Image 1 (tube, helix red, strand yellow):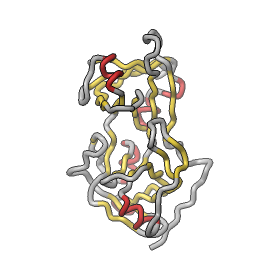
Image 2 (tube, one colour):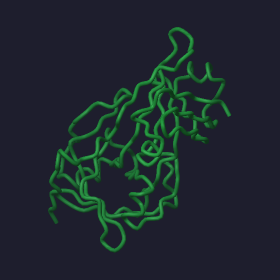
Image 3 (cartoon, rainbow, N blue to C red):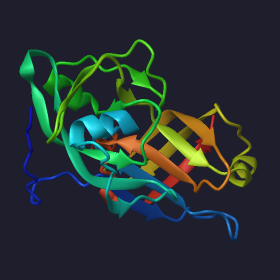
Amino acid sequence: MSIAAPIDRNHVEQIVREIVLAQIGGPPGKSNLVVSVSARHCHLTDEDTEILFGKGHKLTVQKELYQDGYFAAEETVMIVGPKRRMLPTVRVLGPTRPDTQVELAYTDGISLGIDLPVRLSGNVEGTPGCVLVGPKGVVELKRGVIRAERHVHMSPEDAAFYGVKNGDAMGLRIDSNCGVVFNGLQVRVGKNIKLEVHLDTDEGNACNLDRATRVELLKQ
């Protein structure tokens, strides 16, 4: 089966909108807080990449992401849910991973007819599946479709500054004309990681993040 979904550059959602806002009152030299909105996307294994795009295919970098070593790929796939509801052009993010995973916003789940569980990336046990369609083949995914739990990436130095550890929960205050406090951001600490919050499109739109005047992490 060969289906190539055309890309309309005027309507394709930007994969990651990086909004860099320096925290007011932070200490000199402290990392700026970046709040990124991750649009719907998927991660693929090497095996599924070859099934969808052809034997020996390697993902092509379209845009480097904020975290070093990660990128939005040129490749897109069609996602098909129950009753043949579909999203025609969902971006693949690289590099490849041990498990194929699809990350969608709540409204995407409604469109596809999938009841999305909220999970941290990589936790796919007991999650629903879907069908992925690429230009060279089809993958019937038995599990791996989630709504990503909101989270904050940080280095050990940033964790020490905020007084948190890996797995803790934090809050995120966003000041805008639709200001809000998001609770329950899961802390994910790693070496050589930049300070960055990940929200999905529903969350970013709800607080009008593009026009935020201030963002602040809160210890809970």
